Length: 312
Image 1 (cartoon, rainbow, N blue to C red):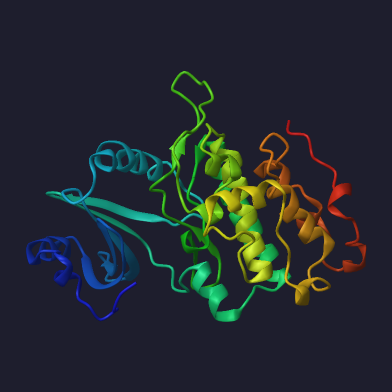
Image 2: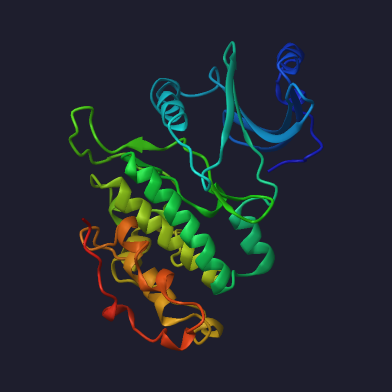
């Protein structure tokens, strides 16, 4: 992150680009984040009636990006973004190109990202965590229905709208899970952050990216409920050992606060065996999400008694 007062033009956005975008109704603002070859800036768009829409603009400089990004990851991201339309996935407003610069305009998430929110409040109360988890899982199930996996799920890529609804973002590592001939494809690319990566990804074997997404979703749920990461990624060998032995624990002060069903939902997602890990379809039918809120006394089943839904 950087100084919000720093002007986007100082980062190399040429005045000619700014002028050309202004001619199409876009106003470029200040920087709100950056990576090695991409910058995210505030922007707005005025339609024909003068109505102003607040946007974020991801500016990608293809001249600064590595070849595999330009030739493989970026075209795939653009292909995927144009296919998506879901209330809990960040909405793309438009994608424009001027020379080597790509301007991806998307709806602005007024409440920032989930990581910043958790750091600010300490943890997310279970009632709210359940709402957000359902929105994430629903968006991810939608994504998986197109045989697309995100592969970089983490709290920083979960955005919050003005009304505190989840918006899944950043599809730079997203991939298709089927070949054009309809054959299921495993991934062999190490993607995302180790702290959120499934053990099969950390170990470096070909993996089912949808099931790896499910693991990452479990990590995010644990972080919301617990306010801390389930596993320490400082040492990858130890990380893998801890993942495989399910060596994670909720903080003592939350032991009697978090319901058994919530803990059970974490457990079936943080299953080190991808063959028995629950899919998004199964998770959306789990008892924690379906349990009637007005009868909390019924929330007594340990995770071993959770019944696994069979996919149709």
